[in-house]
Image 1 (tube, rainbow, N blue to C red):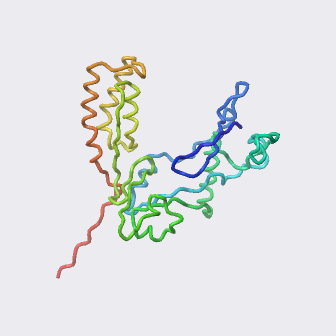
Image 2: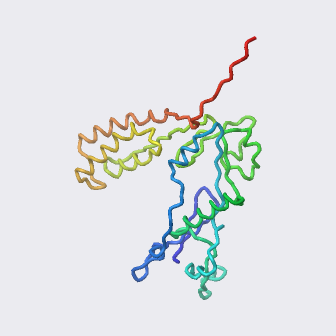
Image 3: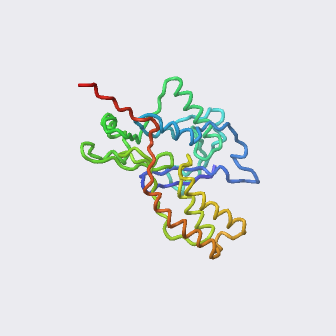
Length: 268
């Protein structure tokens, strides 16, 4: 299995990723794997996230937790230098757990997750956040996300958290949009870069993004290259759309779809 390290600038971790799409003699490891898609669709998860007044997010610590059956481990062989010493002869090892990059891994891991959830649970939840300070106080600091772990809950406001691909203002409990288009060239590549940066899968910002997508469609129909500049007519349309874009930063969408019931005061 060809593999390489991925380092995250914001995290002191190294993750090993296996390139199982890499081909040898015309075939790849993933070319011989298949499995059902058991991942919950993002739109459905977002809709469930909008239920209820309180919302909590967490990561399931499931990486390298699902074992590969003993009889299948030979297909997960890889070479490694003992103790990281490249002067020593290479040794063959086998992965005992499902790896990132294998086409079968999402199916196997999600299957295990669902069965454990139905049976008894058992995976640790970390990086937890919540829009309620009362709930956060009950979560150990070691289990809180870094965005809230350092807060003084008696006086600090909750911050904006990126969850499910969208920005969630926990203090206001609403979805917001951060727009930083920067300087982009008047090309298909530049237009696509800005349009793709405005992401909200439930479609609430479609009235704003649709004109930009129509400009991109027209550029494709004109068969413009990725780095070929648009003509003056398209540039005028694009400039007018960009002038409206900053308004999106003022748009806020309540996360909760459940109305807050105000109890009537009893008559005096």
